[in-house]
Length: 109
Image 1: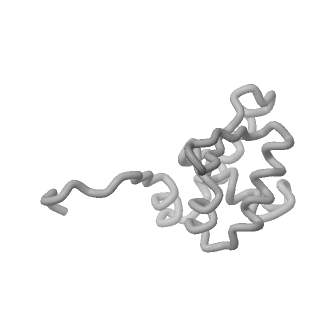
Image 2: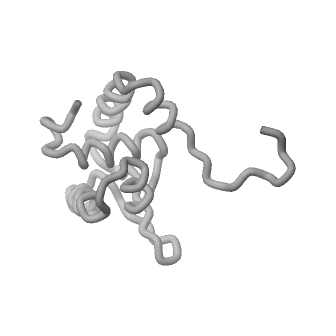
């Protein structure tokens, strides 16, 4: 939807993922969208060089999040949230469901 503005579909994917989950790492984003790891890493590097996102190292993992000092952050997030509202409901629900730990054993479904 916004790939013409951002220049590629992978850039849009990265930004939409980060706006819906606040942070993420390259392999997680690539697996979510079922795309190659290389293009996602390239987009994250490009966005980091532009100051849009920042990287923090957690062990051996590079976790990316939006840079709070980016001057157009509020406007960018507004645009991405608006675009997210036009995604299919199933895709939007998948993006917004952020489970990071396993289910407790014995817990009913």
